Amino acid sequence: MVKKGEWVRIHKVILEAEQRTGKLPEDTKNVPLEMWTKGYLLADAEIGDEVEIESVNGRHETGTLIEVNPYYEHDFGTCIPELLAIDKQVREIVFGGEK
Amino acid sequence: MAKLPQDYDSVMSRKQEVMKAAIGIDYSQFESGSMAFDYEKMMRETGYTLEEMQKIQYSVNVGNTPILELRNLTALARACAPEGKGARIFVKDEAANPSGSFKARRAANAVYHAKKLGYKGVIAATSGNYGAAVASQAAIAGLKCIIVQECYDSKGVGQPEIIEKARKCEALGAEVVQLTVGPELFYKFILLLEETGYFNASLYTPFGIAGVETLGYEISMQFREKYGKDPDVVVCTNAGGGNLTGTARGLIKAGAKETKVIGASIDLSGLHMASDKAFNLKSCTTGHTGFGVPYAVDPDHSDVPRSAARPLRYMDRYVTITQGDVFYITECLATLEGLEKGPAGNTSLAAAFALAQEMDQDQMIVVQETEYTGAGKHVQPQLSFARENGIEVRLGDPKDEVPGKSVIIPEHPSLIKATDMDLDRQKKSLIKGNLKKYTMNPTEDDYKYLAEETKKDVEWVKKAVEEIKAAL
Image (tube, rainbow over all chains, first blue to last red; front, top):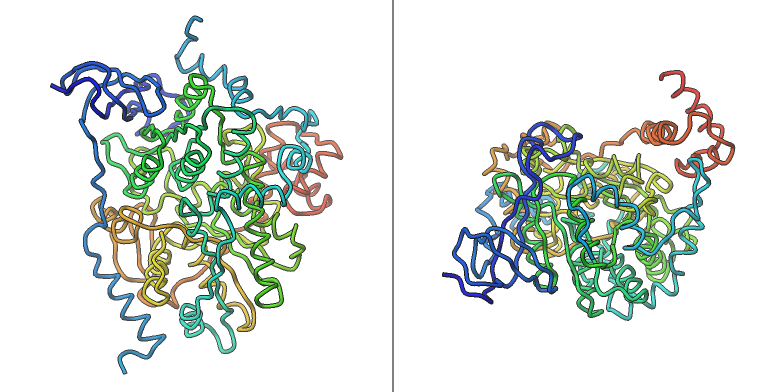
């Protein structure tokens, strides 16, 4: 169970696919407009429940509870050998390689 | 009070009144009733003087960023250039601003204005550096802040660069509302403005754009002090147009009339900007033609009735470069100059690298911004993300790059070329848009206005109008 007062992330559909506006490419028109945001849980709940949260600004939003103590996982990516090739090449051009 | 209807059509029908309350400007006072509106009056009466802006910005540690000469990158350009060619390349290190980009200048003014008018908080719709800038300035001013981002595709996958920007906004105390792809972001944006009564810290208000004037002004002053003259060329990455507009206005205010202003965008032609599938096939999130071209030819399709960002008024040339070029130059900046900066700010640097090779060695070309870098917002995660999404990443000739299909990293720096866009065509497109939106029979004031909008004379505009009418 997730306790009231915990910092959580919620998900919500803002517009269903059929509620979307006309001037959109087909691939976008066929999917809903979704939202994610974070805040303090206002009542005990389980992951997957419809809940209400209070944001850092004191604003209330409702949505499906998806994560407790959410955190970021983005990183510096995997190795791109082509970048090493650039380093070697331009250093040689500018400084004449290893001398 | 009964809650107003929340459905899409009802909310959008309240757009005008909500926006007026959220920005505190009555735009109608600048309108002529036809296509012409008084841009300079709008800038004068709702903006701030240069002196006031400097005072506001310096009081929150924004501006006065250093100019760095890139001697090794210049040497590399000269190695690729014809004999005697290869101008000295400089950057204005805007990453030194509190939020890590020049956007702090726009945000400083917007937040100052919001606080002065008594708003409790600010909201901005942006997936870019502007979010962090508004969050940073709101933190300093003690105002609340909401950033609304277009962040994910329908599978919930986000561009690493945008996710990093969300992290930074939160780190600076903002509430971040993340959405999937689509222009209906505006619907949620209006709902939030209505619910909170916060100020719309739009990127396109007169005070936001005027905030960038200090950047152009500083460039001129710094060059005069250090090198005894204005730079020959200033290159601006062009997306929504505010960066170029503000910088050019600042240069004019400094009296740097001989300095050419060149816009640069990454060529993303062929990728639809509102497409869910194409969203993660872009290997850059800003500074590309998907924003640059539509905002240049139709500035007023932004989130304010009349945008203060009007780049076609100021641009001397508009060039494109490729995603591969930008990644290459970003790597060069690190390995040759010891400067690790975010790729988006290096769009104009890649263009400057090519443009410098057209110029004489005693000339000076300035890239007017850098941006911060970090996890997600770095060459490596962006290129690995491209590979994960099926984009071909390889060394080769960048002219073979197909946006959404490949990122071709130049196999030699001499392959980096700036491609000129047909500015006259864009100017005619702006005129055509005005004819369709307002009247097919412009008044003399309208012609004068269109001449200012396109940096042309009235005769040229009249001829263009006849051409457009004949073709319709």
